[in-house]
Length: 213
Image (cartoon, rainbow, N blue to C red; front, side, top):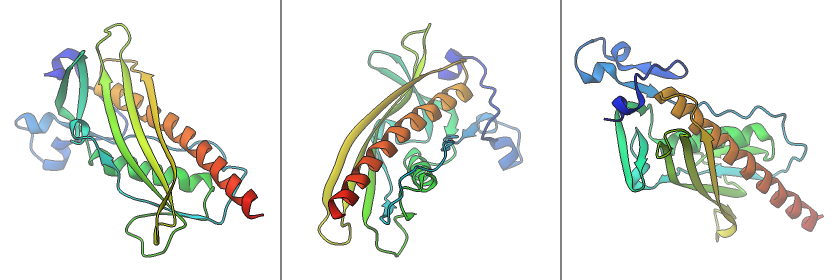
């Protein structure tokens, strides 16, 4: 198992021990740990604000990375899931929520909501998580890899038109051979991707306002 490859997994941030959840201390389940990506927008709100509203739909994740287990690449075409260290919720839901919260904090839109909301929206954002893993193929320089394709659509309640389709890739160094370090690096990847997505959406909204003005 990858647990032996990486050494003891001692995490600190944003994990829950199944021992605490289940109240039992026996078996492999008791040694599992559960993580969330700690990706939060730290910058001040954007200088540009629009009256547009945005709905973030659930994200799709390619099947190889759709489970809650952390995934490690250990050779050119060999990947291993981590039985002991997992995300608390499915990656698609987690990344969609982080994206929604990030864009809400940007203040680019008048309102950012999830797909379950009844209100009509000016735009819809969809995402496809293509890759999401810890890459240990280079033992001296492990890194976390993430790739997401975003679809930014206009007029979602009528005839949807594609405004932007773009794939963003990011990689961050894994600073220790622990699951906590892998999750931290993946969180850095997501922050990098969302920073670039926000910048692209701001350009689109600015151009739209100039065309209407």
